[in-house]
Image 1 (cartoon, rainbow, N blue to C red):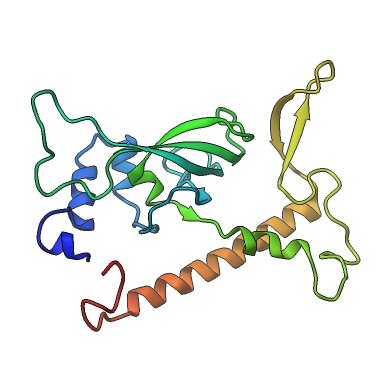
Image 2 (tube, helix red, strand yellow):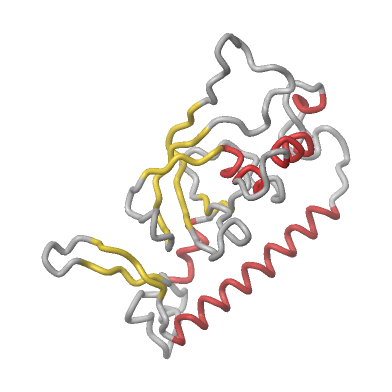
Length: 215
């Protein structure tokens, strides 16, 4: 817990969850109230995968954005200052979509507004780690003797183009069996790593006010 939360200036995570849970069931805020905060740092220019899993929608999607510009929540008319405790994650980020398999949110710079509370519950993507498998210290190819998927080059998505204009008309999931198997393996490895990190965090006992950020 931060110092500002301890003195009652900003909501604690529990107070934020309680506030979000008061939203109607089925709403975004109510869904976010069921998720833990995973990004504590200022998210500007980070790569963030939004929490777009079931039961938020009938089908799970992967949407990765870069937060670009932060906008504060507007106060009600006649109110000059936000009452205490102030919202833990308030405001909205204008984001660029850099990867997506959601039909309504195409990648390639498409802009969307994302609540800060949703960004804080996303998954920060380390681009260096993500791209590392594309090279090999020994000089061999990643899937030797298997090549990269010829359909999607292991991105998991196939881009469709208009025959007349060459413009992008949409995307579809790659159904190449070896590619799907590799993607499932990577997902399983990630989930194993995430579970181990969460277990380690749950087992941690704070040794003092300078033990854990933010200070």
